[in-house]
Length: 175
Image (cartoon, rainbow, N blue to C red; front, top):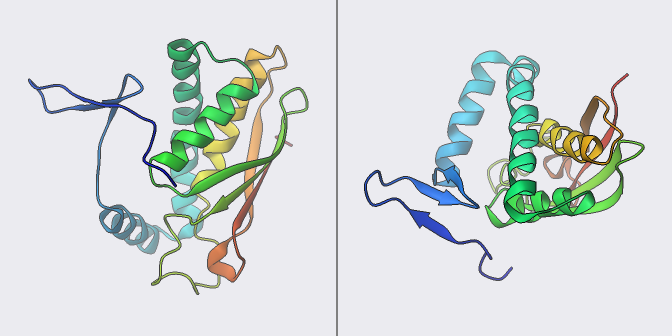
């Protein structure tokens, strides 16, 4: 992948980084993953996912809303921009396989997830569940913007840590 098409602005007075007019924190991948898996180990994967999901969902929604305002984006372009920025910020390479904002559905592929490393590649379980609520939150904004608001949920259908070549997610209306 080429150098990211993002500009990093650093406030000289605070040292705070900004990308796309939003504050950012740059941390090493191992630092983030070590913290993530330590908390998961303490709480259990299901409890950790339940604790993280609402914040991730809301954060994705808010990010898309702000980016739509900053760049004048609408519809699927907002979601595509989100996938591009996630990819450019090191989370993995996200691809939209299918998306329908009116129906509230999407299928997303993730290659090279930041959670699937040499150490975790053969975990035999889903490790990348944290991204699922992000996808639902982002698509909820797009649905609302398209005049078809709905509550969505997403799930990791397969994970590269289970031996697959890539992770796969499905976003659907909440039951």
